[in-house]
Length: 405
Ligand SMILES: Nc1c(N[C@@H]2O[C@H](COP(=O)(O)O)[C@@H](O)[C@H]2O)[nH]c(=O)[nH]c1=O
Ligand SMILES: [Zn+2]
Image (cartoon, rainbow, N blue to C red; front, side, top):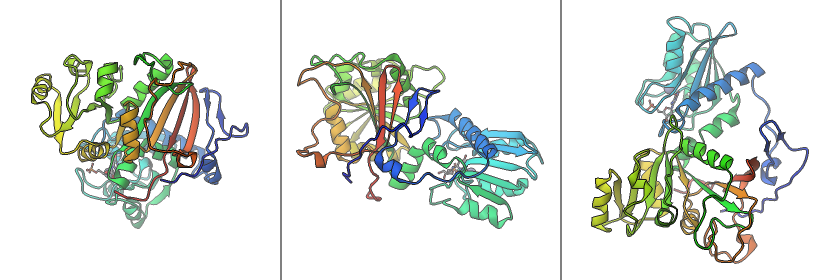
């Protein structure tokens, strides 16, 4: 991992979105890259943002597929819209074409947040569908990194004489599908470590009390974050100490799979995770662990999977095989350190509450990584700060390693 220091610079000239009480400060690394030239008109941007809004209706439900939205515009009017609801169902373009009706897309412009596919997967290629429908222009948010597509859709459309504009609101399109992109490039789900700590770096008191470190607003933000993920992982310690629900608390929202990693299955029989059916639960353990408890879990409708060795990387490899794009680590410090050390975390979301607990043995968000000098510290890139309720949310990414998996 590259340990180049990231010096955060609070500078009044940097972007500042006061309307949403958001203060975004690029890290020194991020701000070194020149600002990207805007592609397309303001109208193109508006239509692409509409595509993203539509795509979000399926938040958390499309894996292993991406979130995609499409809008068809004819004579300045929207004549059809669609989004990809889940894997196995038609793609966004198909729904938009259906909404436009027979002949409705002829001579029109279609906006799609991801490059139209050009392969026979679970569904036929959208490129052919668009050519048949007679669209005149295709505006694409981002190129599909899937090697089955990867520019092929754009090339096919151009070969058919259709005008194609690529890269409108590309960053926003990429952000929405960062899990999908990571899955395709690294053959693992994107690992997001989220924690809430006090100003003096503690996630609980010495006695383990942690309800609540952050404000209600920050907790709602976590619920929204959960809705966008495929799974949430915790360790046995978190189940024993916090007895969490790990749900989104929203009736309409997707609830991710709740995953507990426990080698010995020394877990409480009465935990909320197996007493509540609001979300599915999976317990990952090692071969032959505590058969009596396994039976109890199965009776409660909890899925149990035995891995030959239970490590963060093995857990992520398993979740990749299950088709997941993004996994939220909501575990304690020991498991978090091991997940980081094994490369199972790419993104960090740290909520910092303006409170002080004190004490030297109160638990901290990340356990021992074995570092003795500051030069070993792991530096985040693309760092952003924003205020959420009375707390500060710092988010950033570990530098991506070249495809090593
Ligand atoms: N969901 C989506 C696309 N998804 C692309 O197609 C792949 C899945 O194909 P399939 O198995 O047929 O569903 C997926 O990995 C991604 O590359 N493409 C699009 O044009 N529009 C869509 O709405
Ligand atoms: Zn498609």
